[in-house]
Length: 253
Image (cartoon, rainbow, N blue to C red; front, side, top):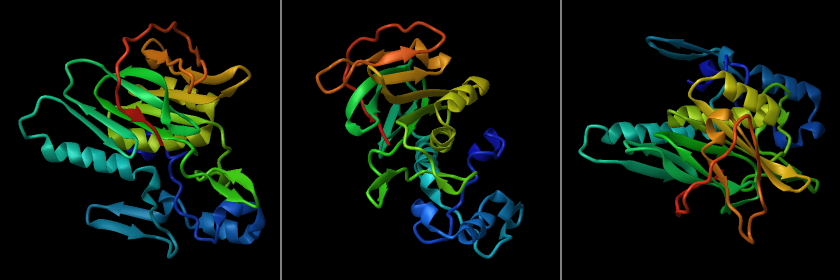
């Protein structure tokens, strides 16, 4: 689903089969090229009878879609049961279903998943966040992202966090990773170009934390001011409107 939504250009990364790819600049170019050659959906054939691997080193890595697929499966498993509304938090990814109206959910600080800094009012669907506060790696003392850019076979730049709302959890999970790889400008343009996809990008700015929202979310977001969170300057094409205070689950990575 995520692969076809973004035309296959930013979600096809498979595991690079070389040691410590995060230290990509220390790995021989030939090894990186060989690993990249084994990655991508072009190395698989999807047929009615099953799936065929077209390269002996090709493999799937579920890090960019595992939570989302699990959340959608959980919702499907209880769909026929009698219940009024549902909220699930699976490791920071949120799934909402059958609510009477939009629900208020919190987004965590890019560097501290326990600190909420933004509130969003969202309809049924899923919120997923990609960033490096929990899973960043260090190479020779240098912090590097755990998210790999399939275009370069190297870690994406560390630059805040990307939170995506989509109608399905699988799409939200895939696209939060893809948008993080794209970077804020391209990711926001992607969200604006695709119906049913909204994005909030959190990153440090000259005056503190900055939230950049796609137009569909801008009027439904609120900066949370406290001693633990700096003021957030929300920038988008529309004005923002305040939300009533309420404690809710936190979308984090």
